[in-house]
Image (cartoon, rainbow, N blue to C red):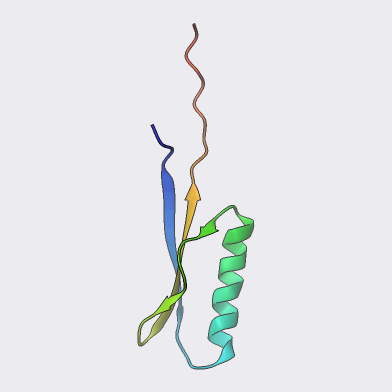
Length: 66
């Protein structure tokens, strides 16, 4: 069985200035440090900028006794 994967999408309000990119980069870096990985490229709508991320859930269950 494959381990479950946790998906998140980070979002910040989109404005045509560097502050939007800096805020998204700060949030992404926090999640990278917490073990998440990028999932695709950043994307945007008229009002928001997003980045999808994922983190494999590597919790291991004990092996059954033999």
